Image 1: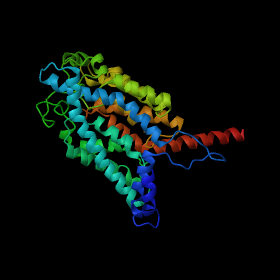
Image 2: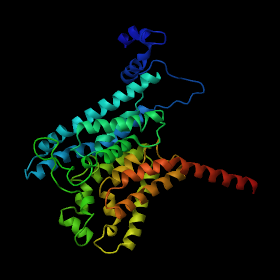
Image 3: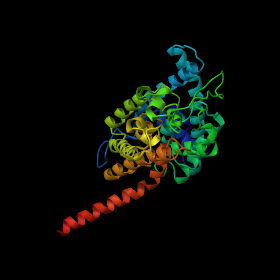
Image 4: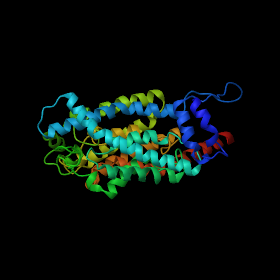
Amino acid sequence: MKALDKIRSAFEKGGRFERLWPLVDAAETFFFRLPVRTAEGTHVRDAYDLKRMMMIVVLALFPSMAFGTYNVGYQFYASAGIAAGHLECLLKGLWVVVPLYAVTFAVGGFWEVLFALVRGEEINEGFFVTGALIPLIMPPTIPLWQLALAVSFGVVLGKELFGGTGMNIFNPALVSRAFLFFAYPKSISGAGVWTLTGGTVVDAYTMATPLHLGIEPKGEIIAHLSAYGFDFWRMFTGLEPGSIGETSAIAILIGAILLVATGVGSWRIIVSVFAGGAAMALVCNAFAPSPANVMALPAHYHFVMGGFAFGAVFMATDPVSAAGTNAGKYVYGFLIGVLTVLVRALNPAYPEGMMLAILFMNLFAPLIDFVVVRLNMRRRRLRAAG
């Protein structure tokens, strides 16, 4: 702290390095508590701030992060027919996941600092959660240079051009994934990107995920999935190919409990996403042309396949891009669930659906809130007039 005090004047307004003040401020607020604090008067004082909220989200992500890292190694050895121990699986997973996080935070941090310096603003913690999320929604075989491009696209075009943290319309992590999906579809879709093989992270073992197997089922859809080993409980636990943090519903459930218990994640949105998915699945089941069609897939299978659970808990609940009114959260979440299952059932070219459903509803979240507020105003006027 004394060392910072000695050089502070050179970075403050009028100093030689005035433009670099955001870097000094970021270091100071990261390592030290500010000496000036409100103690009395009309200020509302609360220990809960942006840093603490983001730390809770990262803690909630940790079960998915840890299991996903282990699963990367497990799938690697399973594809090679090698009986590896838990430690070996974890170490192999770390060998893959750590570089993904290193690239994500290095590139994202660079853009955050650059925009803060250009604007002359404080460096905030807006990328902390986004950086924790991005590697978890990627396949383990994603090339690092493509990941760097995706992070740049998500941070710059998905957030900074809208004004930075708190001003973005779309979820930046999903914007990064959408960029990869449309710019480099072979790296993030298809059956050959979900499991590592060989000695490097660029080769892929061609094994489909449950969503890909559901595109062209042979026989009854559930029996077809089970024939490949994808029964409900295996998908619930998550020992299957897929995006790094999206496979284990158990790990995601643990994170959901923490988010809801601390009030960081909206239970209204989470519950509504699952309700919307269940409702659309029932409609699809009723109109399924045959038990072999993907439309016949039960709702509880949708919940544990792909990124449904992860998206409902960690993506749809983003407080910036989601609906803000309580009634709006129900509508917002319900429509995300509906659209996800609708895309999965009727669009064989894109078997996931959750990413596009959330981004689409991000666009309509302000409109939903506007309608809710207007209806509340109308109801109050009628009540006052009566």
